[in-house]
Image: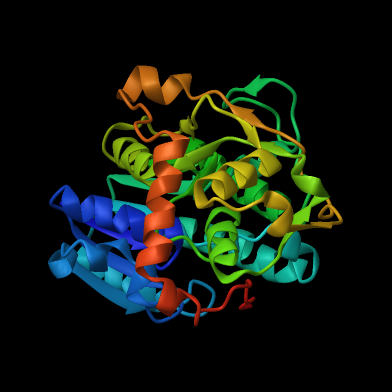
Length: 328
């Protein structure tokens, strides 16, 4: 089996690459930047990278080269993690988010729909398209995006559905809850809390950490994505989530407890981010009942793994950027 993974340098993309290699697939990875340090690439730790080849192509600038590569390799499966993905920062340069997440993504879809070797395209998107919601939401929930990032993802999702209906484009979509796990970029809440606690630095807790989220381990998300790729129904969207929802503050408190530090010694208050959704809870009944997926790594076990990863790579991680660096 051959799989092309767009956005293979991303946390979710790199974790899926490792999962796919573990399933015996040959994987073509495509991302706009050179591969980061191996601490952020699970397939480099596992020793399964013999079946992996990487190409540094930018979706915004190298679409022709990407399509030439795909036409030469003819992968039956393409999984797309490539996107401008930071929510709060999308207010600063919204045009960059729309260029990547809408214009370039729709161009990609228009090329892929013409490839007869493609059996399944999986578009990895986000529950941010729903905005802040009440109760548990199913895949048919109306879109109500509240940030430029969320609007850009909603636009591409709606465009993709029209391609499925008009052209029979063999696409399926996934929307996962907040992912975490070893290898995640240091500006995300879980690794940042652990690292800052280890280094004696202060963590800004926006809005006091009052917003609620479901956190799901990236290994479970990779398993779900694989199941959608191999068995998902064309045109369907699949939610990937756990049943546990915690506030950001409660999450940070849990991490601090594991590290034996007081939360007041780690965090400092900060204003809430513009347009941040207060809560969303995803109903994952569809993927559980139709594809046999279930989450297997609970939050406590998952956090323990993240702490171990930070400690094993602490000397290297202290030299890595702690904050998000925007690339147009």
